Image (cartoon, rainbow, N blue to C red; front, side, top):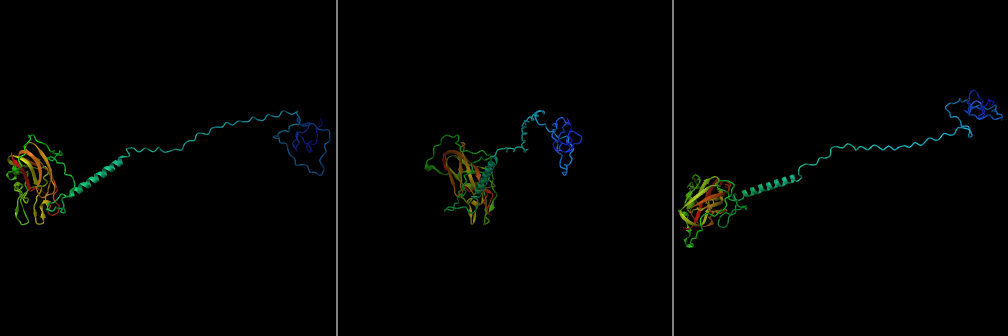
Length: 342
């Protein structure tokens, strides 16, 4: 085969080599894949036409596949690559602080404490109001001039004379039933009694500078202007009255303070007053008497009970009176024993 001098594809003059330097086609006779040259003459380009710029062969260019089935079979397309889905990494929850700590303790405890405090405050207020009542100078009086107790508090439960918290309950003694005396035989037996007291206040003088004594006998003379008086609070004190012989008593009583009014001075209000007493007899019988603010004898039925003496326990005593006439003394103006000889 004759090697052409010009490219059979573009007509460019061929140099040495197996490819056209202009279009890159393989040269017949030099490259095995080049098509054989045709017998037809190749018409050179016109003289006035400038040849295209020289192009040197690029060995990286893929060779042009020869026409026809004589070429090698086409390469199989690359197998599709199956991409395996990679599971996304588990999301990490954002860092959190420690879980809130539950409140310890009992949620109702503050409410309970509040209720207790309110109850205590209310109790203290009520106590102060009750304590203040009945000791002032403005207490009401009835038509007879006898002063009435103005506080509404219930009397305190009687306490034992030794000051302990054990109450002194009323009781029935060991003596047998006593036949009540005839009504015609009943009389006042106070004048024959004698009194023993735990203490006596010193003598003083009244507004007219007359001496005033407070002996125990003043309780037995039937005169409210005279009185037995002891210093301070007489709560728990015990007085003993000797009747001289066995008597069947049906009533006892007393004036529970110093029932003397001297001009503008009311010594019943100025001194302490007895709020509650307990009467005790020979057979052990005990009877409690609660007393109001009255400047007269307050009687208590007790019988009939046979006894030769009467023990009087002072269970509750008021505070001293207020104002310039206030006196820290416990006083009894009179006692009363009514009955008949046994």
